[in-house]
Amino acid sequence: MSVAVRLPAYQVLADTIRGQITSGELRPGDRLPTEPQLCASSGVSRSTVREALRLLASQHLITTTRGVTGGSFVAHPSTEQLATGLATGVSLMLSSGTLHQRDVLEMRGMMEVPATGYAAVRRTDADLEAIRALLLAPRPDGLSQIIDRHRRFHLAVIRASGNALARLMAHPLYPTLTEDSLSGVISETFWDRVDMEHHEIVDAMAAGDASSAQRAAARHVAHLREAIERVRPLPDSADAVCAVSAA
Image (cartoon, rainbow, N blue to C red; front, side, top):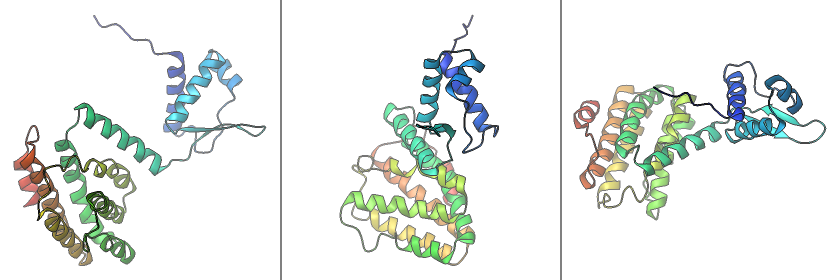
């Protein structure tokens, strides 16, 4: 028989306030009740209220200011803060072994391929100029600079798709391609092929050809996956799926 776990009082209060924020009952910029008011309404001590507020602040849901006009306020959503939290979570899952590069690359295929198609029809001239500036020719000096430009190239493509949620979800995926993860993968022709694939994506976007852009993106993700798996086989291989998506 399972035993119900009683949550700490501060977490119960934090969950209640979080629910009010995520439901829209409390809007960005709204002031939360004062600490004495929260004590009275929830029946908990002031130290418990403060612990709940600290938890909400650590999750970037509220901000607290001091002084006569101070208090706790619902935070305005920040894509950068949310993306940083997601990226940290993905890194922790990778380091603990609960997540694998296979999962990251599969997710890139599921999101990046259709997003590149949207970018082909939604991109502006400014988007295209920014993406072209991140091509790998001329090649930057140093592997870390090359990887950083590769990451920024794909984030710029996602940005050109015009979907704010895709931009948020993309941020944790690209930092996982690191010098360590590419150890033993790099060959004389690896980045030449990556650059060629990036050019194919840009050319399709410039032509406004969503289908060609999607196919180019699918080939690129499949190439990355094949190159990594050639050195360190990924668990639960899904080559057939990758092959279909890249066709």
